[in-house]
Length: 500
Image: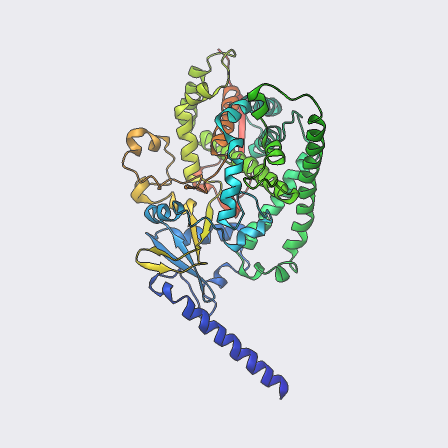
C-alpha cells in the first residue's frame, strides 16, 4: 500500500513538473514543430539509438525546406532551429548571444575557444588570444606549411601509378597535424611521437561525442557512463589528454630555461611567439595567467580544430577535383601561371593570386562545411519573427542544409560550381547566406590560417599529381561526428604530371 502511495506521489510530481515546463515554454506554441513529434517525448524517439550517419541526415532533413524557424521538442523543452540569413545575422551579430548550450560540454574542452559556455568569459579569452593569429604570425607560418606539404607529396609519390586507390585523408590528416603541431608548439619534427595514435584516438572521441549530442538518453553523465560508447571514449580521451599535457609540460620547462638567457632585442622576434608560448606567457587584463587546465583546453581546441577541419576540406577538394577534371585543369593552369618555376616562393602575395583556387575551396566549404552544426544559448530575452524568446533557450543552425537554399544558390544547389563566388555572382547575395566559419564575434579565429594551409597543400598535390576517382558526387554519404565526415574512404588515384 505504501509503495503505491509513493509511486502515485512521484507520478503526480512528474506530471506537475511537466505541466510547469509546458507553461514555461508556451512562447514556442506559434513556431512549427519538426515532424514526427510525439506526445510527452516530442522528437526524442526520432533520434533514439541512431548512428552518426542517420543522425546527420535526420538533422539536415529537419532544416531542409524550412524558410525561417522551426522547433524540435526534447520532451516539453523546445530547441529552435534557425534557417534564414536574416535570423542568423540577428543572432550571430548580437553581443549578448555568445553563450553555448550544455552539449558543447560533451567535448570536455572546458574553457577552450570552441566550447567555453560563458560568452562573457569567452570574449575575454578571445581578446587575449587574437594576437596569435595576426598577419605577421600567419606569414611566418607559411614556410612551415610548405615544408610539411612537400613531405606529404613525397609520401604519396610511391602510390602515384594511376590505378592504386589512396584514402587521401590519411596523408592529408598527417600533414595538417604536423602543420598544427609545428606552428602552435614551434617544433620542427617530421613526425610526432604518438602522432598516429593521437589521430586514431581523436577520431574515436569525435565519433562518440557526435553520437552523444544526437541521443538525448546519453545527455546525463550517469547514464552515458553506462554505455559502451563511454567505455571506448574514456581511454581515447585519456591518451589525447596525456599527449597534449606532455607537450605543455615540455614547453613550459623550455620557456623557463629560455628566460635565463639574454633577452632578445629584436621587437619582431620578441613578439613572434607560437600559440603555446602565447598562452603560457600572456597575462589577462587583471594580471592573472592561464591555468594549466585552461592551457590544455585551448591547446586541445586549436590542435583539433586546426587539424581536422583543414584535413577534411582538402580531402573533399581532392575528391571533387577528381570528379570534375575540367575544373581540376583550370586550378592547375592557374597554379602554373603563378608558380611558374621553383624560384617562386609561397608567400601571402603569391597565394592571394590563386583566385580561382580560392573559389573552388569556398564552394567545397559551401557543400561540405567541416562544422555542419552550431548553436547559441540566449542570455537575455530575444525577439525573432515576433516571438519573444526567454533566456536560456537553445538556438541551432545547420550550415549543411543552410548552404543548400535554392533562393540564394539557385535551382540546383547540389551542383558544384566555383563561379558562384565570382564578384558578379555574389553581388546582392545576403552577406549571411554563406557561413562556413560562422560569423560575428564568435567566428572561427583560425580561418585565415586554415585558408593558407589548404591552398598550400592543394598547390603541392596538384603540381605533382593528376587526381582521379571512381566516386560520383551524388553517391557521397556523410555522418555527424562534430565534423562532417564522409562515410567510407576519400578514395582517389594519383598519376604524376608530365613536367614541361
